[in-house]
Length: 148
Figure 1: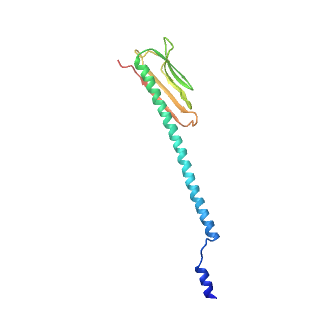
Figure 2: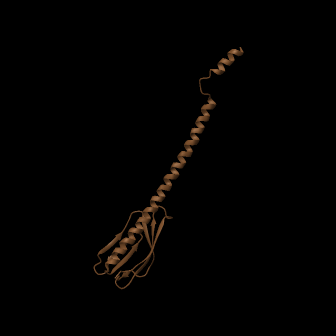
Figure 3: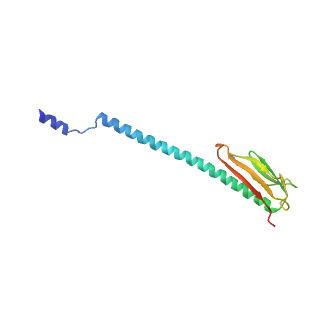
């Protein structure tokens, strides 16, 4: 009888219910951890891309204002929540316009709205913000001078 019992114990060829449940729990646990890390990385990536877009928009804005200022023609600057427009004060022709969906602009301070680059400089403090994430902002604070 003991001999028969030993042979059946050594001849186990299946998975017990406890082993099956333990493996399901472990797979579920590791799957949840991997899933969480994946979505945290995805969220972080989306935030960084938005931050980079805000910084690029601020740089484009600076380059555009500088290009108009260096031409030496008198211009006026208008800032609305959706755009920044530089227009010729004599002909009202738009010299530069910055509008981008998902980005807002806020004018903090400016020396003058109507600028004559040959005789005066332009000091401006402008905030470029993301509409989706209000914590993402880039501050453009600079002075433009015409080189002679």
